[in-house]
Image (cartoon, rainbow, N blue to C red; front, side):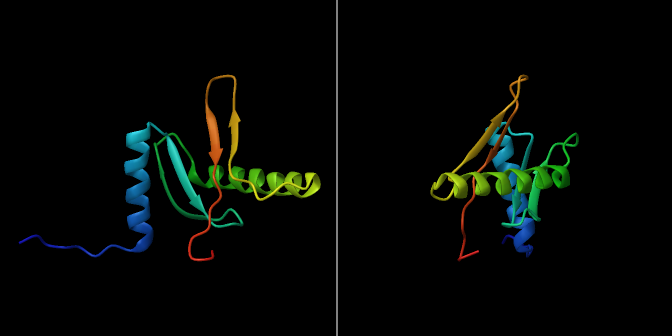
Length: 98
């Protein structure tokens, strides 16, 4: 018989993010609330989830302002690429009306 160890919701989300990073080759993934505060993250040792969360909050705020000023619908995805081939992808979504 297998022994089941209970996990918290954030522990399970972090585990799923770690698995996603491994399968996708991502150095970091961060799940934030709509204000940009981190809920869960998984990152390589050289990555800082708190800094990444702050950047995501800034990107989301900017995208919201641009969408509003241009009369666009809610943002589906925001992607930034740098000259070194690194990318930042933000995909807003709702879960249980949150």
